[in-house]
Amino acid sequence: MARNKYDVDEQLEAPFDFNHLKRSFVYIKKYRKRMAAALFISIAAAVVGLVGPLVTQHALDVTIPDKNIKELILLSLLLLGCSLTATVLGNIRGRIMTVVGQNIIFDIREDLFAHLQKLPFTYYDDRPHGKILIRVINYVNSVSDMLSNGMINFIMEILNMVFILIFMLIVDVRLTLVAMSGLPLFILVMFAIKKQQRRAWQDVSNKSSNMNAYLQENIVGARITQVFTREEKNAGIYDQLNSKYRKSWMRAVKFSNLVWPATDNISTLVRAALFAAGLLIMDPGEVSLGVLAAMTGYAARFWQPIMNLSNIVNNFINNIAYLERIFETLDEPVTITDKEGAEDIEDLSGQVSFNDVTFGYEEGSSVIEHVSFDVRPGESVALVGPTCAGKSTIVSLISRFYDINQGSITFDGVDISDVTLRSLRSHMGIMLQDSFIFSGTIMDNIRYGRLDAKDEEIIRAAETVCADSFIREMSDGYETEVNERGSKLSGGEKQLISFARTLLSDPKILVLDEATSSIDAKTEALLQKGINELLKGRTSFIIAHRLSTIRNCDRIMYIDEKGILESGSHEELMAKKGAYYQLYTSQSA
Image (cartoon, rainbow, N blue to C red; front, side, top):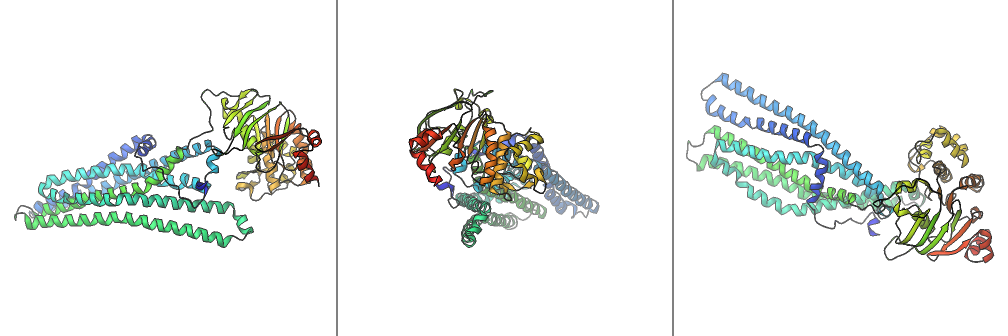
């Protein structure tokens, strides 16, 4: 799919919906008491700060002409006290909002991670992992300040404007009207650049996502890059992505930088108009020096919250694209989920049935069609056939990693769609082709599927699959730290550790998808003894390209042409001299 490429922008399907903001209040509501306290402290700081120009007016018009030194000292101390009080209150408010902001980050990331854990394989099949990662890390960081400080500051700056307007009206009504004369011009400027600004920051979001996706892909594939000497080519591609990001960023900043100069220039024009009105238009003596000083002081403060509001709106517009991406991820449907009334499977004998099952990864294209078979409890079934015939698809459907398009799959006669996913998969041991190793100790990796397992049980599982000897030869044995994806382990070692992890879970139904593909023939011969022990009493599905490893299975199903072409024991299929016979003899030649 196109969206799975690192160089394809993810376009939003609709303009920003302000319902997203209403949804974000879920995260804000939890901290409303702290935010209310921060707002109250901000109001107190604002009111205290607005006393200054009135004190200045009184000093210029009364105290200084009267040469009242004592009162002038008291007024100076009052100004100093107001400034210190406002500073202390601002500091307290800042600490409160820092805590709130970090809590919001925590909550959003927790919800995103929990949701990502539930999304179906198709979601990860369709998207580069780097584009998913950037939403959880970068985008959440960006929007958290908007949802905490941004909301408080928005309300606070509006209140600041109201308070300043009240103080201005107290000083002089006519000059207040002059001070507000620049508002219509400011509104026109904001409307002129708002739409272009949002589109520009959406483009920054896309280019950042593309660059991050390619970077993550290359970190994971660093060895392949060096094997095929792709360093220069990849550097060139990254340079293009980086250049596109820089270009989009500069374009977005250009629109953002229009807001502040426009506001500052309008503020300067308004203050000039105040001086002109006070000194040239109004009658001499109507406006005292103190009134003019107070009004210009309030006018400067009146435009400060407007400038702050423009910055807040500016930041808000910048982060809308990120907020949309976050909710877009949270809105991604969890298609593989428990249906209403789903029940747990307590005991399972291991009987598995496919009843006229049809499935395709994409609409209109089927991988398997009308497949039916029954597997008895404890029976071992091998799936063989050409690449992409549907072998791994069948075992993925048994585990309900995907939902089928038609038919039904039952365990002990119960449709797996009527069973909770947790109980369904708790009865299954699944070893996929990709032997994923997590960062941590080897002991932790084997214990991953059964956290209550004792060390003795882990060692016993490792011994069964012939992993114990190489583990003990490592620097710290079972406590040896391994990197993400097991980069310091061989392919065979990773598979053996994964095998021990699967064995430890003691499943009723076992799925081995190319479980021995990275193991040498000598180790495989030893491992086969452990596999034989593991298969006893368990229903098992085994996919293997080396047919010598599955000839002892109870049944072999040859998968091709979207269904089961042949089915029977090794001897029966060899006697038929059909597709399986041709495949087996070609490997033996």
